Length: 526
Ligand code: TNX
Image 1 (tube, rainbow, N blue to C red):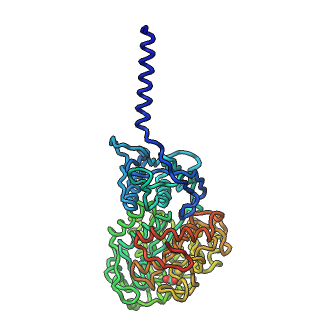
Image 2 (cartoon, protein in one colour):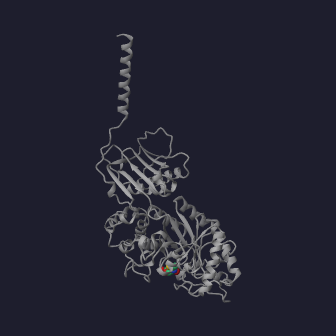
Image 3 (cartoon, rainbow, N blue to C red):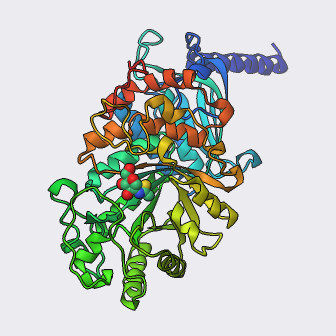
């Protein structure tokens, strides 16, 4: 052999060795049984789903990576890893530099694609060896991983390889919300709920892509948030609740803890201080506030509409200024809710005068005012928001003022309405709301409120008849899951027959989270 041939021969041998070595490294492709991503029980239903009928093999050789330097992305990776760990007891490294034999990756990627320009939009690509979540914002990525959490099977397939593999159906999901505001409200005044209870509710809401929790912090029966400049509010006003139970309140530190917990789940907290009505607990703490010269008695009943602040007294506005200032300082979200409902003993002209003044105070502290629909009677700014709950005529006054409207029609969206006459908890002044009725309406086209004015949907949970987390769950679940879908999914993508099957398939998740949902007979619970 001449030198040239020797070289050629060695090169060929080298190539063969390399190719062979690579072949040996490359595990044979796993043959997954056919899957259908489009048939997965995802709630809320994504905008577009395209199935490719294979699977991603989630296993101990999987790692999560996130875009370097993209704010929030690494924490989302860690959040996902933690949820995978608690769902299937599998440990997955996040952004690890380890030389582990990593064969598959979940990549949470910050993308500048114009298709993702809405803040909560995301794309989810699931291939045999990679899952890619694309989003412009951390918020979008966070919504995307909720979808992924929902399609990771609870049981592994132990026949595909020598180790456990959880096959995630392959394909592509393109998704974004129908409304940017998707909320629930929790009344912690009529009955107090602990920080732990509120965190659990936040976790459950976040799983279904709800992005706002409105806390009804004050009412006739109790004041639940520490105000340092007016200490009696909690010292006296925090001690009572409906039915004579022990009450309670959040210190500012505890409130901040709730806010931070929600923020980690890309959820905004909206504080509500209800006024000028619903203020008996405030006036019990500081009798000067009601202006009728009487010291009111603590109230632990369920009537509404009997209390008012004195709308013509300076002290009342200094009080409100202090309250709004202290709460706004620990609330990073853009909103402050002033209540404004059912002020039946406030004269109309006083009510209007009051709301006009309070709007200025809220704005001065850097927040955008929300109030129940009645605030539309005042000369409110178009930047303020009215929450429609019972009278469409009043809500339409807000529309004429160019205000945004939050849809919470009591007949459809009140979580405290009884399911039927056999309901264990709840009221029925507005309606009985079985699980199908709660789902079968269109917030985008309801009671003549124009779509352009609708900010989104909120399902309030008033707590006159519930006093612990199990009772809260009985009224909220499963209906809140349907409201999550009404808020996120487009009207074309919503269908009761399809939804009710997906809802039934939430059973393992709800059981795993120990949610005491109402087992409606309309649903085939698993
Ligand atoms: C009406 S809804 C109220 C609340 C009650 C609720 C009970 C609204 C703005 N006011 O004070 O708790 O009904 O369903």
